Every structure is written in C-alpha cells, then in structure tokens.
Image (tube, rainbow, N blue to C red):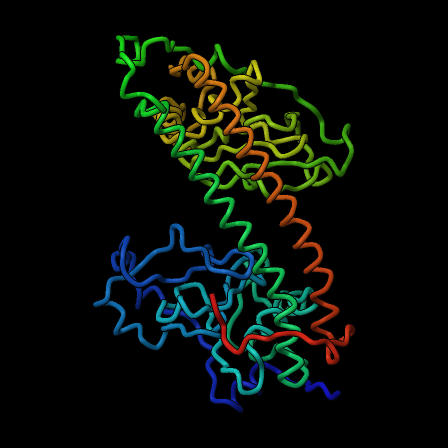
Length: 421
C-alpha cells in the first residue's frame, strides 16, 4: 500500500486550496464585535481540537460581507498562529459561515487528495507539532505564517485508509465530547437546584411553608441563617513541593476552569517549586486572585495547589452540598469580588467571606440536597477519569495510526463521508 509524501503547500497548489491568515486588526476592529451575530474564531476558542463557543466573540451581519474571504466551511482547519504552537481545530458542519479571526490561519484544502479529518489528526501528531514549533519565528512568543504551514511535510495513504484512521480516532474524541456534554448538564442541574432551593426558596412543598424574618430577609420557617465560617474552614497546610512525591497532582490557577466545578486538568508537584497548599479529595478550591473569574471546583483527588487558592473544607459531610452550592454560586462570587482587596490584582479575603450568610434548611431538605450534590460530584469525577483514559488511549494510537505503523487496511470499519458535528 503506497503512501504519498509531499507538503501542505504542494497539496494546496494541486487542488486550488487556501492557506491564509485571518483578518488583520485594521480589518476587524474591537468595536466591530458584539454578543450576538456570526462567531469569530480566535486562538483562545480552540480547545483540544474543537472550537468552544462559550465566550466566543461575534460580528453583526453587516460586517460579514467585507470579511467574506475569511468565511469558514466544513473541513477547513483553523490554526492559532501565535503562542501555543499546535493549537488547531477542524471546522464542522454547524460552524459553516463562521469567520477565521485575527491571530489565526486558515487551511482549506478540500478532500479530493487528503481527508480533512485525517489532516486534522496529522497536525496533532507530536512529531508534526515539534516540526512546526522548530520553524516558528520568535523566542518568547512563537509565531507561524503561511510559508511555514505550506512547508509542513505530510505523508498519507489512499483515501479509504485515511478515512478508516480518521474514524478510529474520531470515535475517541466523540466519546470525550459526549462526556463533556454530560458534565455540563450535571453542573447546570446542580446550579439550578441550589438557586431554586436556597435563593428562590422554591423547594418541594414551599407553597405550604410559612416564612419568617431573619437577618438575611424572609426565610422558610424552621430554617436558620448560618455564617459560612460556621459551616466550613479554610485549610492552610503549607508544603514544599520537593517534600512530596513528584507525581503528586498539582492544581494551579491555570487548571481551574471558569464557572465550572469540574477540575479535569492538573500538573504535577515536580513542575513547581515554591510553597504550596495541601488539599484532600472533595475539598473545594476557590481561586482568590481576581475572584470575578469565578474559578471554583471540587478536587477529584488529593494533591497540592497554588497558594493563591483558598482551600475550603466543610466542617461536616452533612454540609458538603450546601457549602459547594454556596461557594460556587454567582451571588457568592460577586460578594467575593466586591469585598476583594487590591486594585490591579484583587484577592478574595477569607476573613471576610466567613461572614457570608447562608440559609440552612431543616431536615429532610438538607440531607436530600446533600445527597443530590454528592451524587452529582461523583458522576462528574467519573467522567473526568473516563476522559483521561480515553485521551491516553487516543494519544498512544494517534502517532502509530497516522504513521502507518498500525495497518488498518483489513479492518472492517464504518466510515463517515462528511465532517459532522
């Protein structure tokens, strides 16, 4: 079975493809962006080979016409050209018509010679990323250009084999994506239930409940107003990373996602040097620098974290759900932001946060909510570890499949003819 060796530029010239930069700042101004309209893909929107729409900038339709040459179509690849070399995403059918933004490069080579999904995975191969990184211009902020991408060497098999390889690798990414969707649904369920029960007081049977005055306002009869400090402690167990196992998980602020209680990414103690904080599985990690970033999550395992994190531990397992719901709520984050100290780098202050008022229900509501939150968190952590296993397996297979080390020609694999969702 013959494999073809060429470059992206040669393929582009053969099929009349496009390798171009996104619009420059003079073509797309900050004032052109809006909350609604046609999404514009920036490097920050590219996560693990896919485009994350949450927080993506848009332009209104009147700006799209003059940006028409930067419109994306299914099978295109958007490549970040500054900083994180190797950050690229495959454009799917539902993203057709989006705009390749400033700071990105667009590859549009069709599928007559090379399957777009195969190319997407080829560009994720460690050897390919390393080759491109070596060609990048600049030391502190590596930059790519069209000449570098045109020069990328590529080797590929006949189309049917390409599509078999694409289908195998896509299956792993599809499972990962499904798990991420489930995580999002579970987080929304937890957030909505907390708001319904503890902010709006619309818990089961609330229609027949009498309300009474409290320092927090009207609350259900039988409930109490507690201070957060009555329900949880700040844990400040400092440790030198050199004194723990180098493989100990490390959570820096960069590992805490915004507005998500699921901590799915971390480094290791061997990568850091200054004093850190110890935490246990189930502790709540609250990013105290710039608290408006809303970085609050539940530790899926024990480890060490940045000293710019508040490690929150419920005083009782019975209060875990209530403490998590409270500290991850928009209202609490707004309070932490309003009471933070410092101008350029505001920090949340635990000594202030302990006085935050929390409505505490009577039984059985406290127990029911706690059980619900424990179940949600357990499911979230299961999905985190499943995705880690899927990623490891995919990453082991990817270079072997893409290089032809593993022969798939005899495998009976169903392949897709389109770049779907």
